[in-house]
Length: 366
Image 1 (cartoon, rainbow, N blue to C red):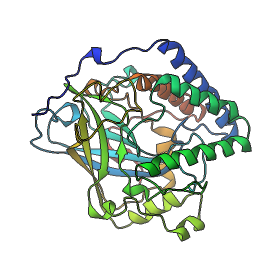
Image 2: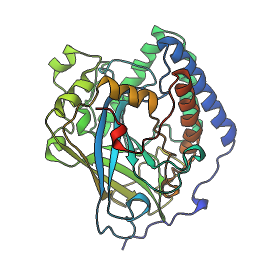
Image 3: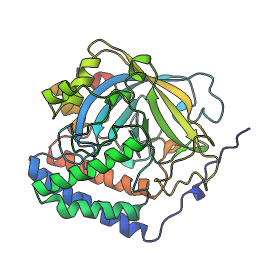
Image 4: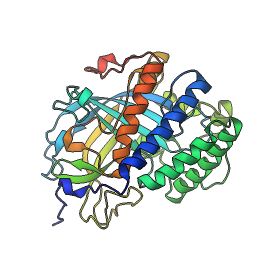
């Protein structure tokens, strides 16, 4: 029988100079946010700035889960409405043809219980944020600070910043290629495979009720399984290199239904599966992802102007907007708590849009 590590507060270890490093990261992000506002005359997210689809779906928690999986949100079989935002990782609005990590942000509606963020403690929503790569390459705050300061130095350099971002994207593309998530190429125009065939990961660890886990979302129905690793048709890219990801998702959901499965990978060994270094991939031969629920999307209009504005200017997604049972863990996540809230406040203030947590899926525009 596999023995899973029980959660305790002692699992997290504050790093040397963590508060100072975290403040430097957040301050740098804030300065870049201001530069991006001047560029677009509109405040955008400091990461995953570009939306490609805003989906209405439902999360069905599986019945009769074993005790180690029946935790937190997944403790009881139930169906929840969800809003899902698909995005790419850059902190600026760039053409879809550029290589980039893709993001899946999930907002579950109808989740009762006190949430971690004090200003949202009474909200009935819970967020999960994932990327189509299993780890955070800059897995500690020291490494993240180096990357962030490098980006900031070039952020006000106009075309030079764009060029550096593109070159960085090539590195991302090659990382993705190494694990079969993208084309093996060293070209700047390297968009990767179909976005609906990707598997998405929490990358970092989170509390999973009485345990510690990472989570993922992977294609379940055959029509999205067959898109995994599938190259995007060149004609579609050539038709609109700036927004073809938006187009292929919109075209798919004109008539199709898609199913994805959410799974949990529980920690069995804190040496092999650390929480303070997000760059370490937890070995699946030691602890595989185990299914806990299914997300279903029915045919819909995925990116109407009203939906785009709602997702980009009204909604916020924060991994710390959650039940205590799903609190993100590790130093790279602790700095994200402050970074997300700082960015969100700035974005909503500059765009003169109140941050609203929905109480019903009906608040999502058609």
